[in-house]
Every structure is written in C-alpha cells, then in structure tokens.
Length: 349
Image 1 (spheres, rainbow, N blue to C red):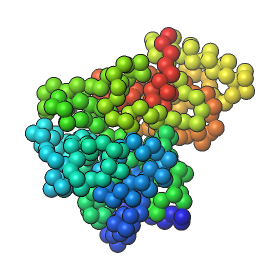
Image 2 (cartoon, helix red, strand yellow):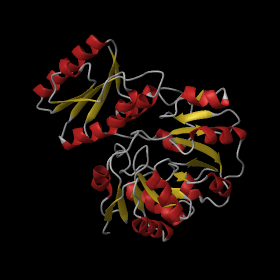
Image 3 (tube, one colour):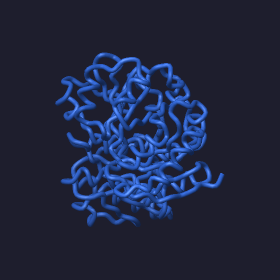
C-alpha cells in the first residue's frame, strides 16, 4: 500500500485535503491524524471492516476496544443506549478535550469496534484538525493511538510514519501534539464512575464535577488481584525496544543505584540511557541522558515522555532506567505509562 502523507495546520485547515481524508474513511480506509493527546489511527467507527483494518495495521489484539471519536454532542445518542447525568456534566466541563467516557453501546456500533464488549468508549477531541476530519468522515471515527501495538504512542508524525508507512492510506502531519499522553478513560456503566486509565483530566478534576470517583486497582499495581474492567488494560504498552526499569526512592539513592547499574551494563558492552529531570540530569553517567523537564512542570514531563522513549530507540539504547514521577496530579498518568512501558519492572531503593 502506498501511504499518502500530507501536512495540515490546524489554524489554517486546507478543506480540500480534509475532504480527501474524509473520503478515505468513508470508503473504509485508514487515516492517521493528530489530536491534542497523541496521534490517532482512524477508521469508520460504524464499519466493522474498517475496525478490522485498524487491528491489522497496528498488530493490535482484537479484544482491545477502540475509542470512537465524535466532533459534536449531537452525535452521541446515535451510538449509545443511554446517557447518564454524569456524562452530561462531564461533557459540559471537559468536552471537547482529553476525556473518554464509556457507555453501553447502541446497535449501530459493531462489536468489531468495541472488542466484543457491549460498551463503547467515546471521546470528543479538541484538536481542530481531528474535529474537521471526524465531520468530513461522517461523524464517527474509531481511533486508537497511531503506532504499532505495544510501542510508545507517537506525539509527532515522524514516528507515525516509522510505524505505519505502507500500512495505512494517509498520514496527516499536524506537528507536535500538545498533551503527549492519551486521554483519561472513565467508565459510566456501573453506576459508580470508575477511572480505567488516568490522564490529563485527573481524579480530582473528575470528582469536582461528579463527586465520588473510584480508581481501578489494576492501574498502578501489577499485583492487584482484581481483574481489569476492560480487556485492553491487560496488554503491555508504550514499550521501547530495550529494557526499561523504573527506580523509586530518595533522590540520592535513586541516582546512586542507577549509576551502579549503568556501570554493570556498560561493562557488558550495552548502550545505556536514563530518563531524568532538569534537577537530576547532571548526576548520571549513562551513554544517553535525557531530561523530561522540571519536576515542577508535570505537563512538560507528560508531553515529552513518549518522544524520549522513541529517541532512545533511535539511538539504539539497550538498557534504560527512569526516575519515578508519581504525584497527585497528572503524575499518576505519567507513572501509569512508565510502569506499562517497563512491564511493571520497578526497583525501590
């Protein structure tokens, strides 16, 4: 397959190119496109053949549900059985934006899109290019992140092209995304809202709108006995090609431990890397040391994390260590992604 690559500025959208992209989706093809979170791989959310193509292009397990993206609130009743009051409140506050809500699906949504579940995940992105594409495509675009399954989600088109060139019909280059982590996912189907994936919209932000919100216990604890509430939560994601270990503890102890482990890896002839911060970068001795920003700027850390994981791959780094970034805000989302990238390999010092 020959992949067409186009560039679109969300502040000056080329309507002719957007209609070309929309036509591809209407005809059952695939288009990768930017959102405010990460790049997405879009297909017609109401066409089971399109959803099957998404799974094939990504190498994604077919029981891992896709998120259906809409551009307008008026589109929601067409794909869900009912809209709880909490959904209206959350939509008023956080849509369009980086929040995905789970509902019971209507018959219009094929099981191929929902991974065989009777529920559907829905998001309304705020990125102007994404919204224009959704409207051009007919209103319902199923889209996971635009990467090969298990790899770090792409925040620039370069890595979309690296993973999907020749596998999809079109890639829209919209520059670097704003947030850098996938949307928060909240399940509204069981009465009590439950966060299935932390993101930019934090637990406290959700509670401020709908009151009590539970957090799925499997998110940050690989040893939790509870079964994940969605099949896609059981798969390893965001993984670089080399090994990654997250190290928790006091700053000095973390630095000392990582430097000792780097010395061991280097003695074995392995190329090493460290994910540090502006405050700690100077204390490490690895081959490739990258700062995700200041610990005082969580948004910068979130925006750069996936790009840094990709850059380690570009540099053929074989052994990586990362500091822990847990905190009450979006640090929880950052740690969720890091732990998955590391296969929950965590050392406490």
